[in-house]
Image 1 (cartoon, helix red, strand yellow):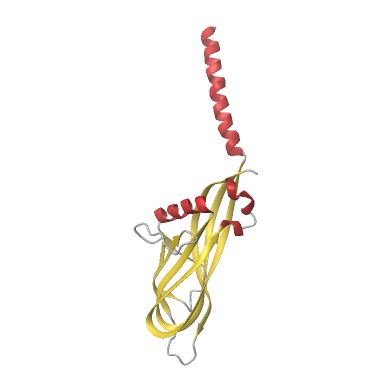
Image 2: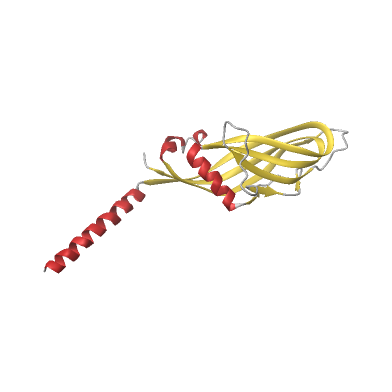
Length: 190
C-alpha cells in the first residue's frame, strides 16, 4: 500500500510539471507575417561596374499585429526572404540598358550604427539579376546560420539594419528592390 501511494505521489508530481509546461505553451501566441522593405536606388553617375548599396530598417514595432507583444517575444524564425524589382528606369540616350546586378547580397547590423555584422559569409545572395526583367517575387539564397544571428539580434533589439549591396553593370539607372521577409514570431499571451 505504501509503495502504491509513493508511486501515485510521484505520478501526480510528474503530471503537475508536465501540465505546467503544457499550460505555459498553450498561452503562446504565434504570428506568421511579412515585413516588406523597399530599397530605392537612383544611381545618377555614368559608368560601368558601379557599386550599389542601400540601408533600410527592419522594425518589429512597425507591425501593428506584433507591436503589442514586443516585450513578450520568445522566438523569431525567418522562413524565407524574397525580392523583386520595381520602378526600373533607364536614362534616355545614356547607352546604359538591361542593367544587371552582380555580387548582390544582403547583410545586417545593429540599428544606430553603420557597422555591418558579417559572420564568415553574407546572410543572403543573388547573382546575375537582370533589373528590368526581375519583376516577380524571387527567393533569395539564404545562409541559415547568418539568419540565426539576425533573429538573435531581432530578439534582443526588435529591429535591425538591413543592407542591400551589389555591382551594377552600368549607370545611370533608377530602380527599387522590394525585399520581403517571411517571419514566424512566438510570444507569450498578453
